Length: 211
Image (tube, rainbow, N blue to C red; front, side, top):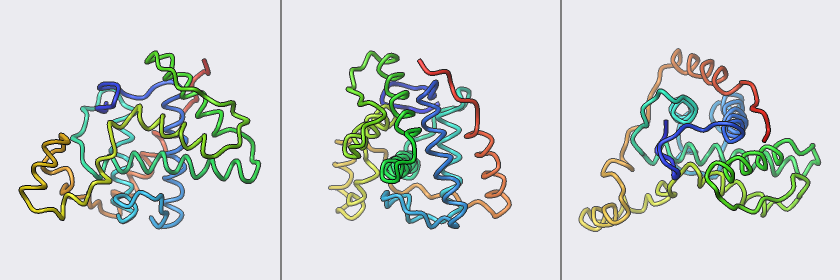
């Protein structure tokens, strides 16, 4: 369960399929590159492999398992979600550039059709054959907007502000006092291996029927 922009929920249907594709791709690249796989999300990119894997496990469990209690928002776990969708865009961009089918674009279309129906939204969705990556960036941002309320993790300048100014800005934006100062997890090598195996089991599953 996650406190999403559409209420407390877990992802389902093609929306969950899309997340699994993106998170699975990110996991593979992190493991292959010993964590050195930048996704243009500085809060996430600066972490070590074990920290990234532990956070990816936390948000994946929260977003895909109904019985889990929603975790407290932190810059770390929200940035991890953003990194998953940034991974999706990077892979989709490569799909377009190298004319490597349209699997990811179709998965984005399916997810947005699902959320349009589920939440009576009206996102204008391009055809999967569209090759305009700017258009697909907008579509992936829409997918992320169904999960995250905002992008508070990008506001780390608050940490450098005087205490009273920082407190006022946090209160105005509804940011928890420990949002930016939460300590990243520090799993042992054995735990990291277990988390990786658990994530592979969680992220590799049957695709939902398209609607």
